[in-house]
Image (cartoon, rainbow over all chains, first blue to last red; front, side, top):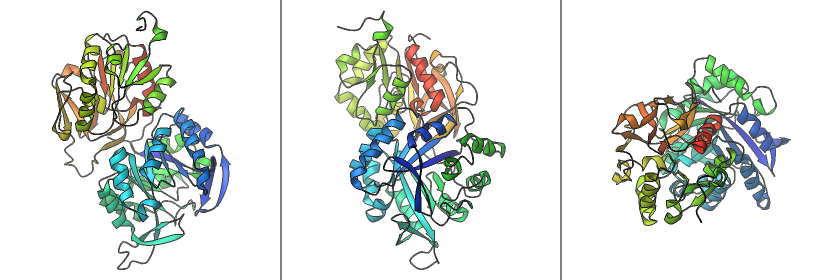
Length: 259
Length: 216
């Protein structure tokens, strides 16, 4: 039986670690390579880097960060943010990323998912979705809408329909990121996560809102998620990765407890 | 001039390069355990190797085409018959059997048996089998030394090996029932999981392989 995964997400801007609250007011909180290694030693199951660098001329900094991390952290490493082409994906893979996250560019041009999955394999393509809750409508029957540009642009695209399309086009995994919950520390969006998890046959990573160990338990059970993504709750030292995993293990979830 | 077998420090591990995915992570993990590793797509060089890693992700059909085109199949058979330690990883392990259900492919036949797809008849089991799962050692082997109950490795695969002879099964993992996750015969050993992505226990396995003389 597979273990549930705890994944730490590091938002990186210009080579530095940043953490956003509802996608605005990002603050610099340290060196991503150091943090990555610290979490790896403390039992982290997987690592996600999100490049939130605004200017494209600084994008190469991210490749250096990925390379530095990959040479000392021997767990799956996933990288996203600004992946627009197979070329971007290949560059990141060569630098040491295992999985590539696609997000906004795939919403604008869904073929990107097909192209990446045939170039680097389905299992390495993660479709990351930023989602907000809206009134149910003809256009958005699930009541959850896809947004892009860090949550600023609603796309008139139903989140459930997009998850299913992403799976069909060859995504190997989904990140369900609730922008309503992001940074609040009030818990994951359970309804949204559960709805999508039960509709697809690929693993689902829940993201946005984790503040307490109980929130992880909730989303991994009621939310049917395969993995829980954490950020600020570990970045600021409120909890250690090992502490979260021990808690989940004590609650009866299968976790990787030997590292 | 081929390196002397008497001088361990001069041994370079060849990572077979046949266009089957990203090999850089395997090389990095080798470096981490002190194994000097180089990529190799040249069958003549492979024939004289002292230690070989045969990695790979992707599909069996295209992998076999690529291996044969480069003449790496014969070189691998030869190097294994010479007693050179060889480690297959994931797809690199799967193509060591006779046949794979993936693309209905005839494979190398180094180990008798087939590669089978997870049946997916349980809705709660997702395919590919992706993530961390426990590895249970079934047979003592130098490459698996130090792996204890509870140790987990990282897997990403939709097919698994079914060796004909149970004596080739070194370790198992439970997903849709128990399946062989490590197989071996003579100086060949193969894992379905990715030691290069499996943290400390994965590095331990690579370090064991680095010291292994190919004898069981």
